[in-house]
Image 1 (spheres, one colour):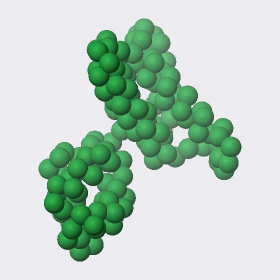
Image 2 (cartoon, rainbow, N blue to C red; image 1 turned 90 degrees about the vertical axis):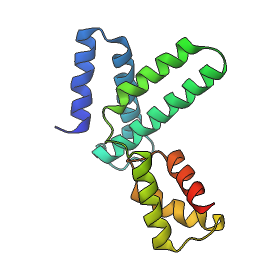
Image 3 (cartoon, rainbow, N blue to C red; image 1 turned 180 degrees about the vertical axis):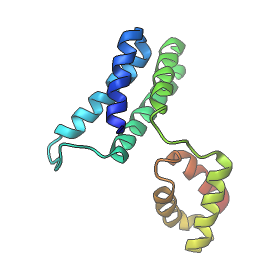
Image 4 (cartoon, rainbow, N blue to C red; image 1 turned 30 degrees about the vertical axis):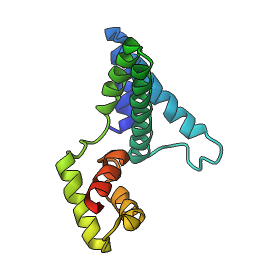
Length: 150
């Protein structure tokens, strides 16, 4: 079963269960998939699972950033809703690396590219983000790189 088929089945289940948060999350994913398929310049009308994972990661990141802004604006009920949707979306993502695993991977990359100072951060980030694509948040990778190159 492809990821897109799994999302379609979960959409039906959320409707049957009257799960409003789950339904909103899955509908947002379906909408993003449809937009990606029909976007101008889209060469193929099908998306690979890896493309869908990237879309979901983007949606989760948006939800978390929105929650931060709602919290800063003293709107915890809206922040809670955004975080709940993000949690529902995260079940479609591969298991994320722990901070310790991210740090170990960044150390390997630093050794591989021969980075010594913060000036080498760009080289390290480019390699590290490719290596950990889909497995770690870019912000977490960046923080680990800064900490290890300091």
